[in-house]
Amino acid sequence: MKFIGTLCVIFTIGWAFITLTKNDKPLSVNEKLIAQFANQRLLKKDEWNTGNGVVDGVQVYTARKEYPAFASLWRLGVKDAGVTVLTSGTYPEFEPVLAMGQCKNLAIAVFDSDSKPVNDAVSTIFTTATETYKKEGKKVQATGDIGNLPFRVTVQNIDSVLTFSCDIDLSHYTSSI
Image (cartoon, rainbow, N blue to C red; front, side, top):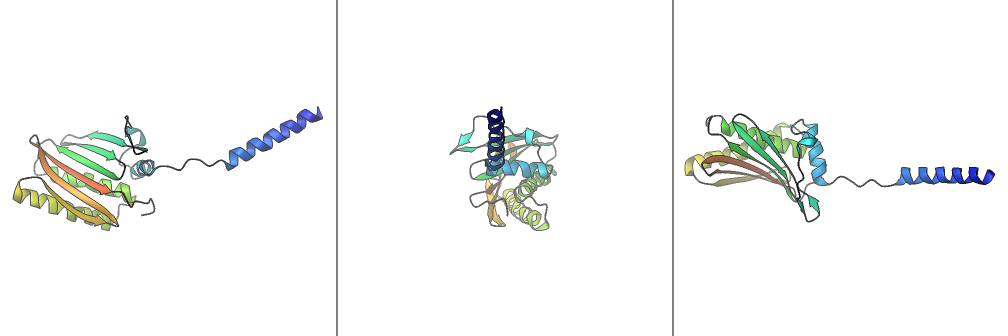
């Protein structure tokens, strides 16, 4: 009986040691970003889809949100995060403002902060792109840095649908930005 008691004690100590000292796998960059989207109340964790998208060992995520005036397609890739806004054409005077809001949401989620400098930087880059598009009437891009991350806005027509895309290069991303 003493032997069985000793085995039980050893087993319990071993189990406790393994349980308390095992290293949980750290979250990937995209998993951290999904948590930040949820933290900022922009997209819930269960709204993201994985599909079959694993590129260079990184799980790629997508999400789609439908609104009356537009649809937004979100993506978390290997080295970038982005949103593409497909407008309906129903409210042409408001659609750029709505699209800029989605681009601001992207930056807010990546930086996990709804700060004035982040919003101002997105507004400046977005306005540059939309003003250039109004003048030239063809695909345009405007770029700038937010913090130490490159941010790009693309405005173009795709099959007569005015489309706005915003992308943040995550090559130098750390969650402590």
